[in-house]
Length: 449
Image 1 (cartoon, rainbow, N blue to C red):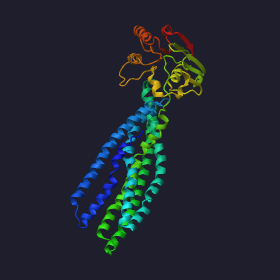
Image 2 (image 1 turned 45 degrees about the vertical axis):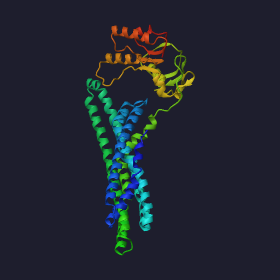
Image 3 (image 1 turned 60 degrees about the vertical axis):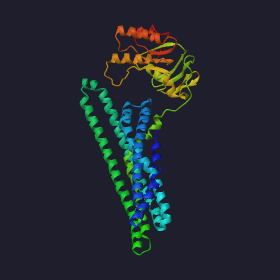
Image 4 (image 1 turned 120 degrees about the vertical axis):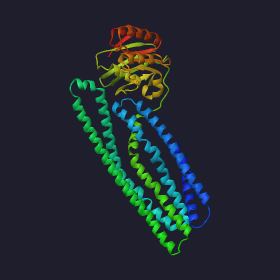
């Protein structure tokens, strides 16, 4: 799900770090190589710039993949989805751009530094090797608290976003019954709870930053002070001393940066942790609906109990029954959006759960009871007509699922829609949730739910 191609741009950076320290120590100790030093510094800046540009493009690709995964996931609360595809996917950017690269550098650069210093000054190399693990150890101790607080912060944000969306959608009803002010109070309480959790997470982040900086500074000092004293006593050449002094901070810098990015990317990791729940599993290709029989075999889910239905190729079936009986649930089962608690949905003898969901949805044409169009600046009837036109225009569809397709239409428009539906579904399978009697004349059989 996360695009990692930008990490390839980090390959030259450890080598450029070593080359820069070598040349800088050589120039300051009276040697040559100033122009080459300038070239290496320029290459290091260029490599980092190329990496950042690639990282932001990778972050954009990752955000697109996440939005697609979250929006296609069935059975998820609208408020949570709205939070994930807006704030959630943007919180992944620090993870892709900052934390992932620093993880790579936190391993590659210290390893390169220790290997180089092992040939220049073994004492300094051993000191760095012993003090380097302190940073990830302290970081892990603080990180345990960070994960807990970040999870609570995300839960508070998702609750706030979901409740606010529900309030906005039902504001007309709330105002009609005088409950708008009460819901405003609830939203304020949820916002205050989110602010409290956010401040708690930030306090831990600042604390961990202080701890990591203190440990890193003390570790560098443990290397710098002895090498300085040995230089004064003449126990180490100037070039070697300068090389150690330049490379020691470079060894700790990626670890410090990774610790800082860990907290900046905490929200993004919480979002990515939800991806397996929504990621669609691949399966077998769906059978050809022109010859495949669809069977709902004694399925039970929600209010629908022990329901069986056989849909032969070319059947046009109307589902009727009282409100809440489970007619829309049947469509949800056929779409794959709803999984049965008991029983199976078979397509050509294959369990629908084993069929690739993306390929299955491409073989269908569906009009929900309340279509949503973006931008939704149309009346209910106009939205219904546009949705029907788009559904009937799917020439490749072998199964039409229509949930009260004429509910918001006047008599004249309904007649036109019925004629178009009759023409487009001729010879193809259709399941229609029907309340109006006129729809019952357009089907081959009526099934009561």
